[in-house]
Length: 355
Image (cartoon, rainbow, N blue to C red; front, side, top):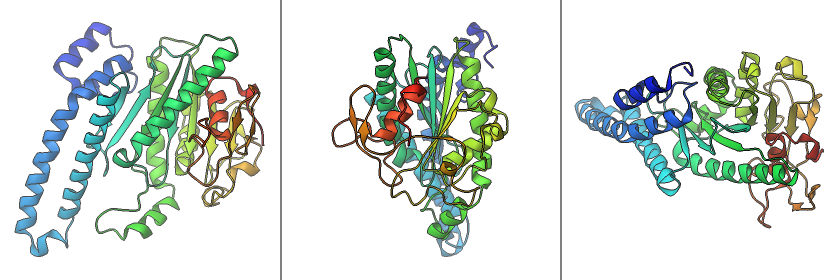
């Protein structure tokens, strides 16, 4: 879709924003305004759906508790909360870019937010999350992590004397396994979902298209793209690479991964020494084994999550458990795992601290 002429893109944005808002390959400078313009219309549609479903519930036996009608209302209400969360994020920082806003395709809402300009950036990263991730509860945290990741990647480039730009993207473009939801034996269902690859397979197709779209929309022929797969998102990332996304991705980091069904770079279509793995102490999800064993016990390049001093002389605290990899430590610096993510994203893997 990047072949669509700019004048035509502007006409489509003005007259039919819904046609281009979520099309991979459309520049973010066009795509983001289209998605932002659709928030209010999607809110009105979901509010109408909620009223209609409520009326149906009143007509059903037991108030719809024995049918899927009540679930439909619950999910419509959650998507309205997703829209509220997006509204809040863009009121706080209008310069962010909304690359994806889809309240129709899944049980939950989908969204992707860029920090920086992916159309012109020299380096782009996409973070793919896992279990219990959704727009309302997770996007704010992911955007914060993406913001800090970008800042550290830019800082490392400056220290290296390289005047290059970075864009980081928080991507929730699939129905990640959840632990709550109406009438589905939820905790057990999430455990069942996360032990299977079906959701990851669906995510992989959407993710592959997204990666190819980023490269197609970039004005930088040599743009460097890094995939960051966390938790169950690492499985989705690995499947996307195996299905052709590797043609659009240069580097990959799997962290907190339950498994990726690959043992060497060629299994993923990625060049040697360009697949990195991290496993924090106390992470009970990493190496779950259901999807091919612990990827930190393969030939992939293992990076440190332990406390230490990085080549720039900065102390970084350890990451512990499943959720701390991309978070800031008590000293205000990214944890060691976050630093390692940043230097890979910046195309400076020689600065990474190995395990």
